[in-house]
Image (cartoon, rainbow, N blue to C red; front, side, top):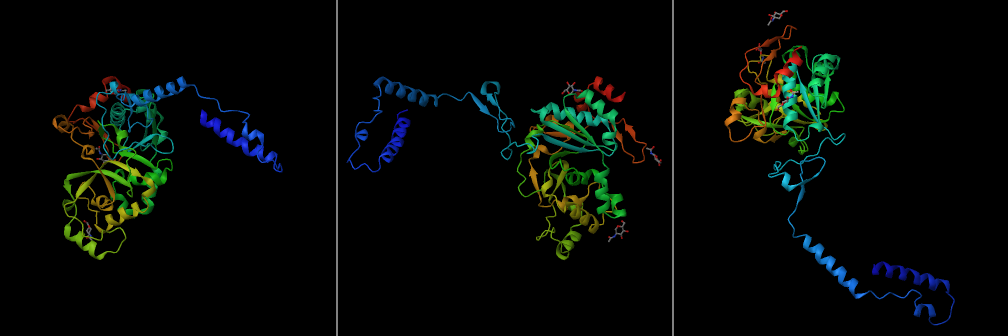
Length: 388
Ligand SMILES: *[C@@H]1O[C@H](CO)[C@@H](O)[C@H](O)[C@H]1NC(C)=O
Ligand SMILES: *[C@@H]1O[C@H](CO)[C@@H](O)[C@H](O)[C@H]1NC(C)=O
Ligand SMILES: *[C@@H]1O[C@H](CO)[C@@H](O)[C@H](O)[C@H]1NC(C)=O
């Protein structure tokens, strides 16, 4: 109060002096007798201000009653009492949803449409998330957005969720153009698609890819906002599968020594490196240039036309030292194992009936399923809606 009064007084003085620049008088009488004399502060106001200061100071010693969860994109204030044990987000995680629209984009690719599997995946993800409104599902299916019936069935089950069906043609076209015909026939599109989608769908730059046939048990939003630093992808490591059981070590050494490609490791490849688990990936499309070329190159030099192993080591080699490792809790587990392990698993395999993709259009439903985790997320009523 008094300081603002003083500053206005000091402002006034020079203008008054400028009004009478040629006045030879030694001192203008106005300058001696200030027209606005400084009011004397009343002593009790001093005291009041002092009390207020002490009061504000003491407030600091009260225990905090509210906090803001760093994994909350809206940064809402949450009272401590309503959150007896706020789950501490993993240290590397600070939630920052897609910069453009604030949504968490979840992408999946299905060779043959299986609505039951999609519904279980969608419901488990929504049910486990604290921010279901922020989740946006993108399902790449053979018919894509032309398949209105499937879309409406999903919307009947999940009327408030953001679900989009996309076609697969554009992505397939990119892969076809980049690979030779013979090589193309042997590629597993489900595996490569997540790395191609950002180049085809400009709005999908940063997303979480989850292969179908999964049940989410963890909060998927904990994965967003992870700083991928220089990497294009993040995945969990599966140390039950090692590089040397998928590719001949001598062949790999020979390639490492002789081939001159910028993406080849300068040091020999670790033979027992853990394989990345490609079931759940964080993808940052901005850093994916060349990835398809690298992947196709490895597929070619390793002669993977004979697909004796179910998993393609070309992907592991293309990602070698180039992906951020997610914590083990994001490694896909078997449903039975997830019951008794102490560490809660975030994602398990779908264990219900599913469509077996033949590739000839005569897909059949496999009735031999092995668990009942899926039933929790697809009650009989919902199952009927999908089946009708
Ligand atoms: C690649 O595999 C095919 C079939 O398994 C075989 O005929 C061919 O000789 C192999 N080529 C190389 C370079 O190993
Ligand atoms: C699907 O049809 C193809 C030919 O159209 C046939 O060769 C194949 O055996 C069929 N598969 C099943 C599972 O019926
Ligand atoms: C989703 O799963 C919950 C159980 O987690 C269940 O109560 C609910 O009915 C399911 N929703 C649909 C549409 O099936």
